[in-house]
Length: 290
Picture (spheres, rainbow, N blue to C red):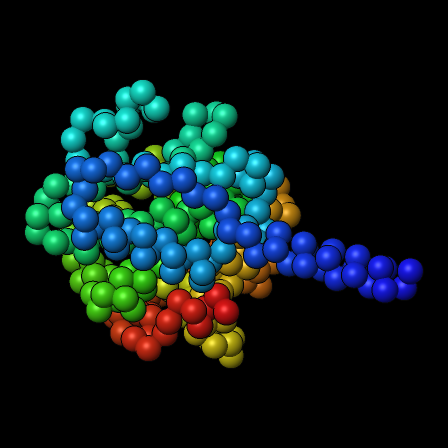
């Protein structure tokens, strides 16, 4: 009898381990108009991201029960009209009953080999990660756009720098036509898409990325490591976000400063002084999420 009981316990442990290690289900719908090279890289990137940022951890019930479809295609008329209507662009989209990831890859990016053709995969995946940790609190009414999009922008740039040796983040931040001084003077505008979507205010979320990098730099001043600071911004804030009705409370709990205090610190930074806020070249995403 004792032997049977031990076997039963062992089976339970084995079953629980299998469930814990089971990957969240992403269903790939990749159109055949995409080059084989892109498809190969897409699969590789998804494998890395699911290893480093496992979606099954802290999964909210909405996504856990249904998995997620990914639709990818080279820019053309929507090639999946029977599945989803009016699909355009890249996003984590929803229709009120389900969510999906869509990746419309512009022909120009493929022809000219722009790194965004790959970084967009990491960007949209990171939004799924934010959704899972925050229990779906990513809309303008729930969380600040600059933390949502700025975080995804910084993460995607760190990814392509690590795996492709491309440093687009520094170049984007140097281009003053891509983001406005309002980041420093009126940062609250960047809490919502509708107040920061004019051309030159936050193109490619560059202004939002600057705010995220300043936040990381301010956290490092509290004698914590760079990777710990990024972990607070990339993960801990979103976990805390799930616990509170207002994002400002989650911000204060996570970073031990109010949004007003942070905006005051932000206003003292200069657009051209990037060296002290850019991520270290040797910092790997695995260091942050280990």
